[in-house]
Length: 413
Ligand code: BGC
Image (tube, rainbow, N blue to C red; front, side, top):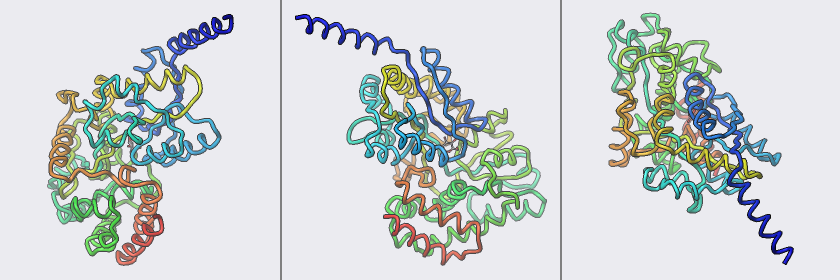
């Protein structure tokens, strides 16, 4: 009797302590630029207002490569962070390692399946369970421009790559840096995939970077993509090597450079600096059809302690919450992942993004970004990026580049 009695008490006590555990979360992310920091602060504030204690683990480095290295070290040492900015197939890769927590109870209680598009929900699932919470939809295939610089030089936003090149030549002759770029592998890959979408078209892009079709990887069209990269290498300034993406955005802001090809986290930088779309800066999708999406999300890692588990549940709930999805994305430059967040407070670039995303979803040209880890597993996307960056930083011919690309992909499988 006695042991049954004590057993019952301790179970009740356990439940009580789980219910009253104060939510704790150590959060690993790579949002350290001006616009990014403003955005993640929205989550920190909402978490604190619900009684949570947030331990920040920012790992600087655009695109998240450094953050992913830090994550691996933490998990290998048996000390995973509570919540991690993680996206695309990397979510399933970590799930297969057996280290992700199941957040299905929150997802089901909050009805995520009803408010997320199926294409996004698919990325958040691991063998039928919910294993990540989506924050936004970033579009990758954008050109940003300084409005005054274009006007002063009599240039319209380019609608073909030939127009882009003609504009760049004119700007260079006028002493303006045509293309603001940071020579880091992930930024080279970002420009490359935007050019590839334009030149290969949505079907060709899918064959190359989703299906890894060898004929497409070695095709004349892919050679044309590398040709255009070689041309664009001539439009960046000589100090581009190693430059952070947000410093490249600043060059467009201050008129030193005319264009940047970058995802709409760049818009977060313009907005954080008080710049107005349509007046100070312009946005347009890169020449060609299609939409490259990049969905940020958070995955929860298996941790001990009711306080951390309470933190994971609270974070998951807040992240997909309607208010957070609005305020965060107003700052971040992206659009909400939820389909039921009104966009009336969003700017014209966000409206264009939402319209193009819906049209491209209907006509089959909504595509995952390879450069931002949405299309391929790490080994394959890494193999492609190695070739892209080796080509951009040397005098390698387009013929050599496509052969190297096909070999690298074949060897990564
Ligand atoms: C992320 C964005 C981030 C950008 C630059 C992308 O991969 O999805 O959220 O702002 O990298 O760091």
